Length: 484
Image (cartoon, rainbow, N blue to C red; front, side, top):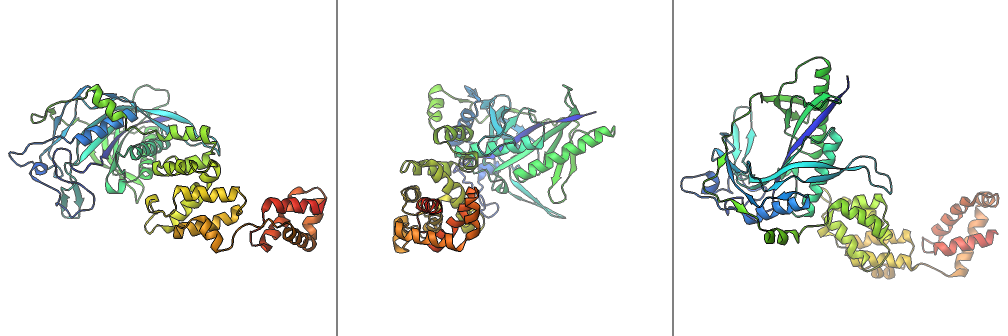
């Protein structure tokens, strides 16, 4: 019997706000433990929560970006449970009236070629709601420590339908969602800092069956690749168990990234009663059409929409758009450069290859941020124009680019200082071409026998002799004339 997996995700996203969800207490990653708290965060008697408007607006913006239905009215509920990371013993969340309903996330599946995007489809969302985060527990052999800095931070939860069927789709979903959230300046989505966290609900059933299998919740996956690996393992584990006529138990399992296996944490055979009830200290939120339209003005162009536009408007290959379009700042950088010189393919090539290489090599602990790059879009455009005008060759242009990256100087300044302007002196070029012909009889004979590509070996000798300064088009023309 063949089996198929059915997967739904619960994704928590820390919103990029200056203060926490229901208090003015600040939140940022990396502060000393338990220094970002106040009486509201700790739930002390007499304290009252006050809503963070920026967090509500960012969640509405996400809903608009993902095609959700924005509720005309939503409310706040208390989710009651005792756990050391929750100082109030309840979490303010949204139960039956969330801020956003429905929606979808476009994903790209493997299969892209040089010029064509891979297979695309939509993953359907159930809802998006807003809540407050909990603290962070650190476990040791004989004790556990809790840091309440994160407690109360604005947290958005996206819940998908059970609409994915393999680990590649899960990876594609999280990659696409992360791109969109960064595009909208919703969150930095750094999983190592806990800004994006994902739980996967996985079941396996006979292929063709409409009935869902027993659901296993998978936790402790700290990277998008880790989620993919954990889901892939759990699908294999459940499939093997079913083939051996073993019963799948509804439970929560923990992914061990070092040993690459899952281990049972707790049973979920019986639903936990959180005793939800409306928060008596918070009024419902009404979202007017005017407010919703104002938020919609800041809705960015979605990454895959931009990629399709770059195909059509600039005729760029997939190899370039797949690098430029996922990064909002990089795509803006590209379009700013194209405004100054209309050669989008060559500009995209420098950005997708040379610039990315230099940023990677310059980073101390990872890639150097684009904001720290000394080269402006105007300078890249100017460099490409110099190549197009025949002032320098493309090969020399790459060397000039590296010097521009280090110094921030204009390309003209570097070219003049280092004497790099391309030579179009026909007499000098003819001399070097003749020397190449005289000293390389083998490619000359091959060319005359009809192997036209043999001329490239002669071109290489001329470019080497002129240190790349000879005009390649003139070299090609001269060689063909001398060999005719």
